[in-house]
Length: 225
Image 1 (cartoon, helix red, strand yellow):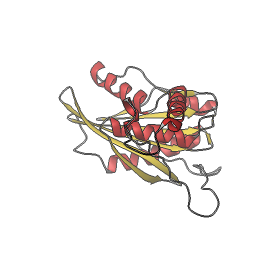
Image 2 (cartoon, rainbow, N blue to C red):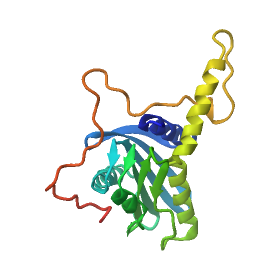
Image 3 (cartoon, rainbow, N blue to C red):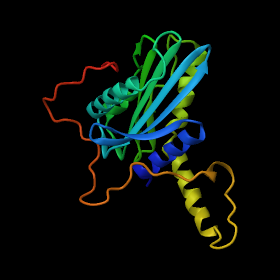
Image 4 (cartoon, rainbow, N blue to C red):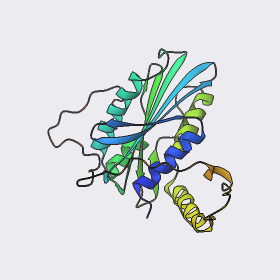
């Protein structure tokens, strides 16, 4: 089965290949892959911030909490002034071996707009091979929504697509010459596949993203409820 690290590695590769600025940041207790894009769509500057982290299981509470922290990080690092000429789109996702129904419903629900900004949530279930997200029309123009939807589905591919990519890469490795001039494989595999998050050097394995226990006051942030 596909591992969260393999999925995040494929995401990082796609971010780099499409001209995004790749980074990793600490979002709460999780190390997240971050991709930042600045594009011009319909005379507006679109700032995309794609943030993803691996967890054992994805719940709605964990998804809301992670999205809130990710949105605060994105707003703090956004280029330009948010408004009609500079829009900010935050796409926050959790990748786990299981996605609970409440998390799938939360990710698939119509996201809320703010002035000059939008937040999308994504939940990826590796066991079921499903990617849950809202991909639909909003009150923004069709060109901008098409750009947002394309960015989301490109940066968060279907697990089956990533699995085929990983299988292809593994099949090519034994055929690489050991000595002499090595030729890069064709297509998208010309760039090395980075691995995020890095493995721990010592001690027990780092736990996945853990949502605060019962009674924890809900985060009130720009992503809404």
